[in-house]
Length: 495
Ligand code: NAP
Image (cartoon, rainbow, N blue to C red; front, side):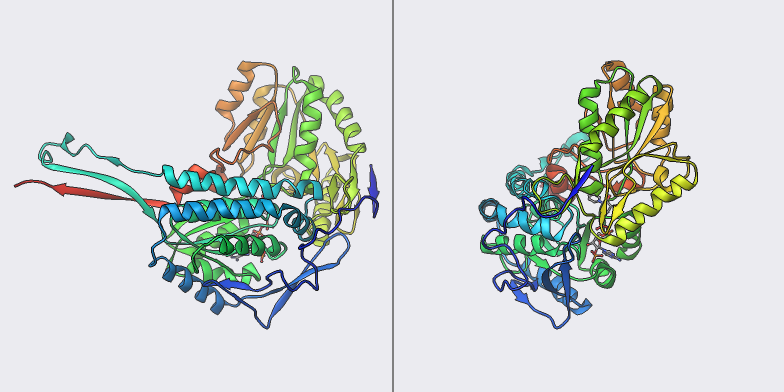
């Protein structure tokens, strides 16, 4: 395990943000205008502390103005074909400047430059698929004559937009997560007020600029940047906001649910995903897949592997091979092309993760690899003998740390996998169809991945969790359905 500073560093592409860059929008987007405020906040790189940009901080009044602009925009016609064209053009624009996006994501957020390069093409694809899905959204005729007395009635239902949607996004996939909310919302005719994470507003502002330049009518997308704890209540409690789509931590989600009142909620929250390794697992395949699932994005991934439940018969071999694999990973700056595990989003988060590892060790756990922190960098860490009830066992660590646990049967593995208050993804490595199917039937999660890590998502699959991992499902088709409501039309044809 090594750390690198300098070396093969990704160059700043022309057009990428810098503290002196005046072309990058740094203000709020309200009703089609970029609004600068007196109050600002700095976006900094967690590895080297460099200021990446200075951004306007909204007040509750700006939030109210953004909701008013969104609400007003709904009165103006914006038909499906025009929405389709805007989303398609925006996707092209994102692809055309993908280097600048990737650079911004790696500088502002917590992804290596290699990880960050995967986000812009994915966001573009999400917008295109949203545009297509908008075309497929339809209703159907209803069999009114199925009830005696209704023979003279004919009718149908169709779907219409919910209205104003508040979208609140986290830092970890700063572009793809907002594309998953804004794409379906625009495709289905809604207006959005977006509040991106304060750590990663640059990619959101660039995304908004690209949508506006693609012909999005004023007010259909508004962006308010600033502290979620200051702005959140004004946004989610506004009665004109008819849906809140939130991705983030469980505690924030609970607060939003309490504050929002009676409106539609979509909650994509956290997890501490389990992976089961059975004796017949192909370890050549399992070890790199699990390591990638655990340590990509410095472990800050809602689908990240946290708990590895390994059958006794392969425990020692698996643990040894995973530790060997981790020894070959490189930690350091997100901008270094050779780095596998970059700094966490802040030194404070890295310190928290370190303290959770320390707590486990004090309770009897043993560190097999890593266990070291320098500033915001936490070395990929493997811990075993973590007692039940330690934070590493039952909470979401959201950092580059995995816990190994020995199990003696599939039943025991499934029981342990389910014994937490989360349920987003779970995975099993096995050659047995029967064992795989048992896991599919019994794991209480939103997805079971067979022979890959929990960190797998296709953007069109229904995505979401059980228990505290969330409410509702994203995934383009599912988000489009959630962001519309049905209206029944019934003609009484009686003469
Ligand atoms: P977070 O602290 O909950 O923040 C998420 C967003 O909520 C940010 O924009 C934040 O703004 C805002 N916020 C904070 N307090 C708020 C309030 N009182 N009202 C309204 N908004 C508020 O989460 P995070 O640290 O960015 O992200 C980590 C969490 O997200 C993890 O638990 C992870 O598992 C989860 N996540 C889930 C999924 C999924 O799809 N299931 C995907 C990615 C991440 P500020 O940044 O200004 O505080």
